[in-house]
Length: 385
Image 1 (cartoon, rainbow, N blue to C red):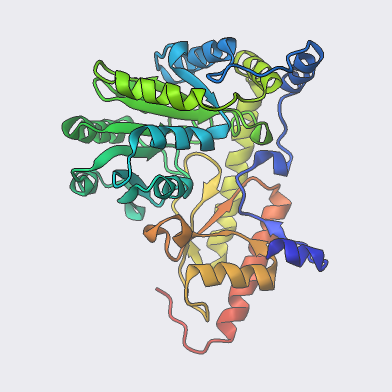
Image 2: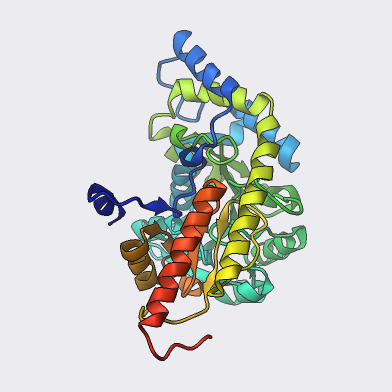
């Protein structure tokens, strides 16, 4: 719909896509130069399916330095973004009829892939009133005889929540008691804006962990498609290591020049990261201030990533958050994500990114506020919830 509006000459503000490169955040220069150099030096052949050996070593170094995770390069697999890592992890664990526990709300690709594998996604609630932290008691109650894994997304997409070490230890205790694998999606590990980040694998003892990560967000390399999966497994899980290996070897590897450049990214200067986080804090705070001034939304302050997940606090002529988003696009030319598409607990929420420049954020919220006022003016009986 947004593209059709643009074809008709309308200017659409895209507040839906978590892509820093779309909003002026650029890949560090030395990484771009490394890509050109890799091509010029002839690194244009197929890479090993598991990934470039030196890149896997660099990832192991990064996990140790950033996240206190000790992982062997032999247990690292380079993937086409985290999306492929998600599929490999789920495919290694799930047979038809098996179940995987996902947070609600959650990044929807987990649901898509689970269903593609003829498995069943089940959900544990993350509660808005606690800052979108997981309800540990509900995790335990949601586990059935065919549950195979618990997925943790931290820092969280779509809510921006960052889990404490205690939160993670509680999840690990449940997983240990029930013999489950923990899949930990940590793609935003370098984008914690307040507090500190704890990796699941750094505090796991005898619980098997599949870590998912990549360079898309922290290095602004979204279009380069460099993700990775690593295994932190106790004794007795050779079957899982073998399943991951077989799946990885069943396809060709990520583009070789890009992998060579990724080595430079991980081992090179990281000056851009603090600048990126500082700019995100400014844009987040502006977005929250402007949303609050409309009087139509409430929002838990996101502590990581670059998403806000406000609740729509008024009811107009729209019958659902999805209809709200559709009419917002048609009338105000602002595109956001409807929260119910991310889980039941996302109902009557919208997800926005705070990546755009301040002037774009300001224009987008002005359009949203004007849209809501206009709709409320056309509906006589509207109550604040």
